[in-house]
Amino acid sequence: MKIIKKIGSILFCLLPVLLAFGIQLIVSFAGIFLRLFAGILADPALLNDFKDANVMLEFLSSSQFLAGISAVYAVIAALVLGFWYWKRFVPKKQPRRKPSSLINPQIFLGLLLLMAGMQYISTYVVMLLAAVNPGWYNTYQELMESIGFGDITLILALYSVLIAPISEELIFRGVTMNYAVKTLPFFLANILQAFLFGAFHANIIQGTYAFVVGLFCGYVCYQGGSIYLSILFHMMFNIWGTFASDFLSYSGNSIILHLVIFVGACCFAVIGVLLYQKGLKKRSPMPEAYTNTRNRQDGKIHSMKDI
Image (cartoon, rainbow, N blue to C red; front, side):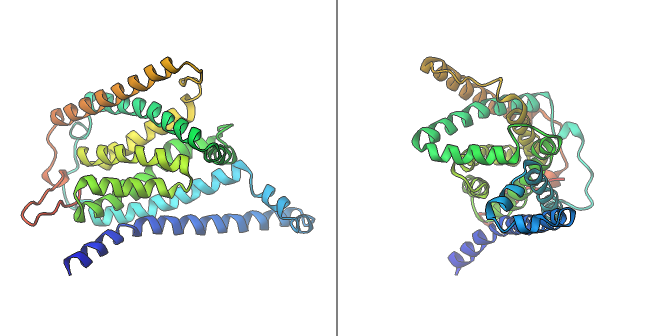
């Protein structure tokens, strides 16, 4: 009976992700319908052109349109999952925590170094997967270009560095991981939410490095006792990936230089983790309601509390 209950609790962790996926489908279909309707309304001749599936596909493949759909979905998902997170996991009638009890210079520097290290590590993960199967990388490149990452627009920048980090952290490190740590040890709960985070991206390349980054987002959130810290880390990661990856990456053929960069990235990540842990110990005390509660009396790790 206990095993069945535990399996049910683990399956329940899938619900936030399924809800987000449902929102994504609804927004996508609604967006497609509205774009087709508006296009035909503006130019009735398009109705005949759309009999050719390729013409319709090209009409719906505008990078601005796809970025807009992604942004609308992410905003709605953030509102829905944010409400869920607030109702279920945010302590009520408790004093608000001071900024110094949340973050300090060491924590920020630790996150910055960890982010920089993870950027290069994830780049080499992508390179390895591309070497294993070039088709995976081609699919990933086509997806990025269709969304508009070849020419960053304002809406894409807002989505990438602001909207997506908030939405994704609420879905995966907020609601999903909080439910998972009620049933599983943090180690397994973190793997579960990171796996779901990777799978949600629906392609091998992006899904694999999203899984790796998701593990560190989960670590940052859980150890720091606040989803704000994982949102900050996620934003840093996306800012670098959106604006700095081209001119801060090495694409040459020197194996030695690649090895040096990889080792340096690992060192950055390790130093970042150590600084983050040290910063957590030195930050101002926070109200008890906001700390991670580990109830060992019944052998379970209970969820994080945050605001």
